[in-house]
Image (cartoon, rainbow, N blue to C red):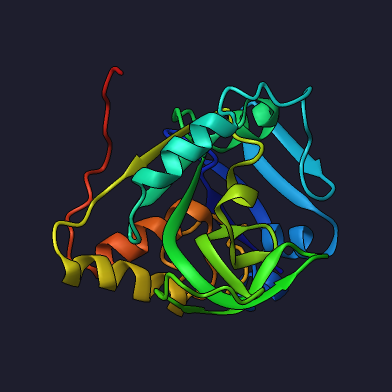
Length: 231
């Protein structure tokens, strides 16, 4: 038995796929199952791409965002800020996911304490630590929580941005209560799987911009449907 499910890979695009009811009625769709068992799958009205982990890369990083930019940029950040970024060499991914200028979002949560896993580059069991004199090896002064193919994880800011060509920070909060809510919501979603279905109604899994939107929305901050600005 099959059922029809709609998937939108980019704005204005609907692709209808016959899905076995075993997936449609279960905890994950066919997209999520393939991504979990084989690799990432992106569907677009112009292409269907099945990529092994982590994605198809096109060339080397342009390194438009260099270490000097990182030093200046990181000094301006405050916990609760939303970082958006794009890497040009992920062009095939970018084309399939969205026509927007920035393709990835992360919630900046600032200093945390937690065990660094060298193999995964994740900070395990992070807790907020605002002690500026902390010299412990498990103290990390600049960190983000974001959703990647492995799920919602905490990583050092440098790890998140090392391959980025374009980076921007958004400060949606106006007061401490809104900021704390954004950070609290980001932490509460740690460990969730990646939402390969790209459906915001499914809060059991998250994709990157879905996590950022959810954090802002939970803080009671209105989020516009789209923003266009010439910089």
